[in-house]
Amino acid sequence: NSYACIFDLDGVIVDTAVYHYKAWKRLANELGFDFSPEQNEALKGISRVRSLELILAWGGVHKTPAEQQELATRKNDWYVAMIREMTPEDLLPGVKHFLEVLKTRGIKIGLGSASKNAGLILERTGVQTLFDAIVDGNTVSASKPDPEVFIKCAEALQASAVNCVVFEDAIAGIAAAKAGDMKVVGIGDPQVLGAADLVIAGLHEMTIEKLFDL
Ligand code: G6P
Ligand code: MG
Picture: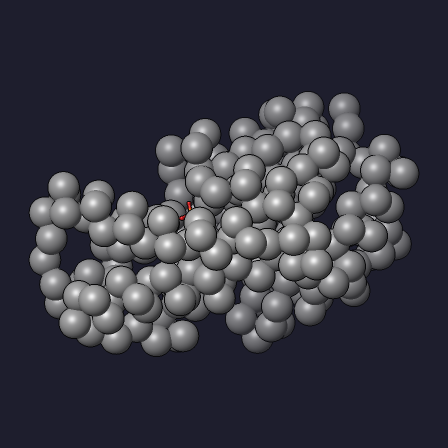
């Protein structure tokens, strides 16, 4: 039975929220309404299809399922064009170092993300081979706050939930980790992520001591 750290991707490993924002805003603008940074914030951890549903509702626009499919694809094409340009420099501070510390200690490393583009992002930023298991939007059916993504990842890592620590920047993700009976480190603002067991500004603030204290 191993110990494991399971990482969310967007907002924890890389800051893709800015690319999501640009692509959603472009789509909203084409549909004739605006899209604010606050609204983008509310979409963290939320799947692509669900995000689009929310955006259309905010804009007061109705689209058929076929049209929604086309809009989601259009947004994703813009998004992929941006993340394809990512490099190892786009890793958030401390990420590479902390992953390497975990490797040295024999602690398993997993990815638990709602994104269907996770593989591409990990590959572009050069950390793909550090992950022992990748569970993403292509393998999961229930969105966070459902714990499915983290439970599947723990299974793949052969770690029981009590031995897993999740790293999350989204409220929905913290709720998902809690629902899966895992410890969770919030990445961001303690005011927002109060439900986490520990809140830090980024992985550059994480140490093995803090991990064991959990
Ligand atoms: C992450 C992000 C969300 C995004 C979702 C799906 O959870 O925080 O903002 O909507 O992934 O990403 P995708 O790359 O599949 O569109
Ligand atoms: Mg996130």
